[in-house]
Length: 225
Image 1: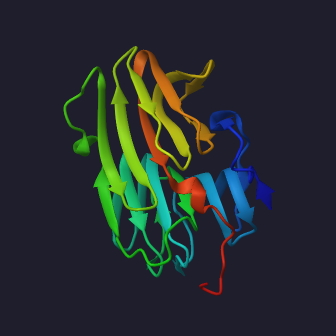
Image 2: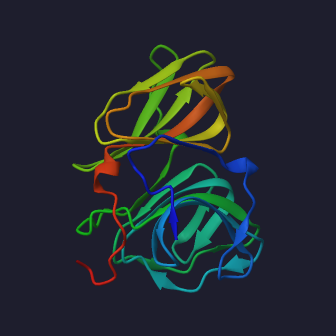
């Protein structure tokens, strides 16, 4: 499957308006945002776990990162409540599921194949004091990408001009960007060379942002090359 694979184009999706699509695992449904490949894919998705649902044990050959959007995600390594950011690099494995149900935003096969940095973070706990109404925590940074979490006061503006493209998910509230109104669950991908200017609505907003990574977008390679 090829979905939103032209990384030179701006893409905006209001994920809350999308239908859920069943995965091969009963009780686990997806909203696909971009994808190169079939079940083994470079993929960005919203994934919903029904109560008591489980995926079988598996190894992340190409790495996995995710945010818990609601509920509590679980595996044999612990519980991950709403607001947790997790990076599981290549070679890591687990058996994911949720006793009470949860929803996550997940990205697969988008790691440097040599990356072995694994962690989990409470995003809100990482926030510093705001400057001009914007508090931004750096969740992860390396030579390929920077991942941040920002909390915007009403009317505050988040700007980004970093090279390599950017990808934004609205976690709560609303923002306006290039004349479009983004709300909770809206996903925006901007190509390399396009600046981001996102201004919060009257209720403020929280945003997840990744920059720099679109230069490295390619299909997964099961051979390990």
